[in-house]
Length: 373
Image 1 (tube, rainbow, N blue to C red):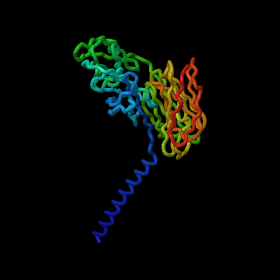
Image 2 (cartoon, one colour):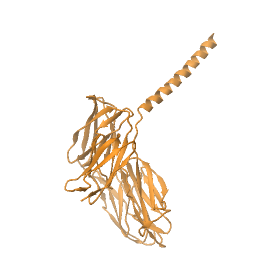
Image 3 (tube, one colour):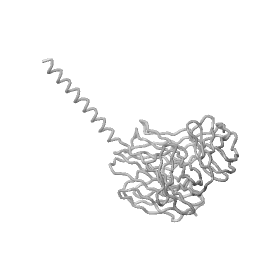
Image 4 (cartoon, rainbow, N blue to C red):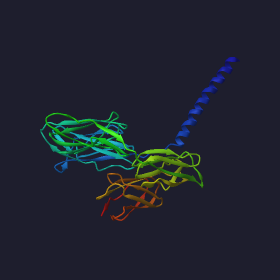
């Protein structure tokens, strides 16, 4: 009798464990959040023609490597928001710029281009260190006989490879109220690697602001919604029991606030562009609607004298606003099937075309480029 009871209890325990695992898996699947990813791509040319076989290294928020194809093109897909450095290399060639910093912030960056020059000259490196409160993510700019940008690593170190003999200036920068001593350093590369004098970073007292708002569903507070912030800063928050969210410690700049849909809800508007100009923004509202529809992205680019900070407005079957990044690229995520109009705007400028009508039908859409006049 005791053995039967033992076996029955054992089978019951196994069954309970199996049921628990299935239940947790089902819940996770139901609440799975589809986070959009973006691409970093561009072209390498030699005298205006495509250059294949160039190794392209990606560092920063992720590390990867690829090679240019027969058209000189390269691409890194599946990239999350973050700061990256793209660096080309090929024996017997130098590149301008030697490296480029790319900030992925709610949009793909598809215009990372390099010009190659054939050379038999030896090349060297310029490296150095930044010290202070913030070590990682300081932008370092190289100018002079060639150009380039890179970012410091977790130890504050940076390096520019593939540098030929010549005169250069190295300049550090970091948004959010920081100064550097010295402000820049002029150096000469002459047959050897060069280590730059260390830069010391000092935080300057700067006022910060906040972006806050509320998410509702059928007129009631909606808690547990992930809210993504991109633009001048990248972070996320979650709505509380009153449906409220808040991002604090923000500096003046352009931001995009986006509620992240689950498999059960979408939001109107799908995103909202916010500009902080010496004051907090406190009335960002989103409405949740029950839906199982698939969502897609609308991508595009603005070209002209001003690339960053152009407002992009989506109207039609849904609404949204965002701003272009430093490369003029933008992305409107979480868009359901339907007909829409995309319109750029920037005070003091006109655009050609003035707007573009698009239809989302089961796939992402890339909009015709806007040219700023």
